[in-house]
Amino acid sequence: MESSIQARIPSPLAALRSTRRSAATPSLARLASGASARLDYRTPSWVRLLGKPRVSVLCPARNEAATIALLCRRTLVLDLPLELLVIDDGSTDATAALARLSGARVLSHATARGNGAAIKSGLAAARGEFAVILDADGQHDPAAIPLLVKGLLEGADLVVACRPDYRSSGFLRGLGNRFLARLASYMAERRIPDLTSGLRAFRMERMRPFIPLLPDGFSTPTTSTLAFLHAGCDVRFESVACTPRPRGSRTHTHLLRDGLLFVSIAFRITTLFRPRRAVLPLAVGCVVAAASLLPLGVLLDFSPLPAAAAFTAAAGAFGLLGQVFERRAAPRRPAPHPGTRS
Image (cartoon, rainbow, N blue to C red):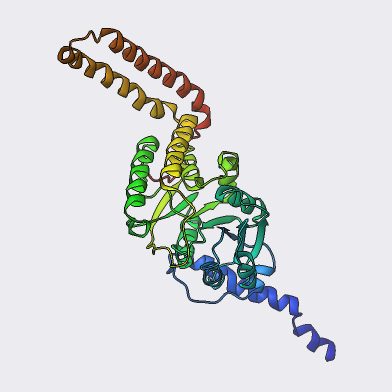
């Protein structure tokens, strides 16, 4: 009798596993079936401790003590089997200590190496099938993460949380972000509503080939978005509200310096996959310059023919180079995945 009673009592580990299956798996199933992405359930800590998490949330942070604790707590209460990695990029404040006390796993750089370097450290340590990059500045609500994961479960390779407007970025940065989005849309031949969003989710298997392309600075969003699009991956954009940076925190990006860097990276990634789209504006610019020299020469009484001929030759050279590079880049462009949105 005693042995039969003991046989009916599950072991503690078996009970944990059973509870883990009933608590963690249904949340993903609910997302896949179209359930609400804003969930209010608290995930038990052992969901993140037992087994392999399906979602790795990577949070690069430098001197974000004003926001990191609340951000960690709001992330860890999500009803997802996740792990939270805070990559402390040489902070001189209490960012790492506060993240650790809030329940995050902390990776630390001895010195500031850059936002992109922090993200690459997080990618190397991530264990999940899916990964989410979440800026530590407090502008993005972690409650939007399940919405992005839902897109991945539906088959997307990259889901970007795009801002409905750029009011949270300020007037000048908003203009810069709009310009970058228009430029990237032209180069990718696809409308990109938000190129620099700091909240995005992707499949780790799709990101790994692009990790060598990621720079160490503030351009991982630009690089990853264009690389995924040019490679024919399924990229989706979800409108998510964004709030201004909380008082006491400051941005580490510089408008002019990093803006020029984003433009150069857009050209570099496009040249790698679709060089014709990158050199076409240069060729058109040379043709326009050559045409404008003719009436200018009449007005100023000089011969425009030598300069116009030089610009015309340059336009032809750019066109030829674009054609040659386009053929060399063709093998890097796989066929679009079934169901890819255009």
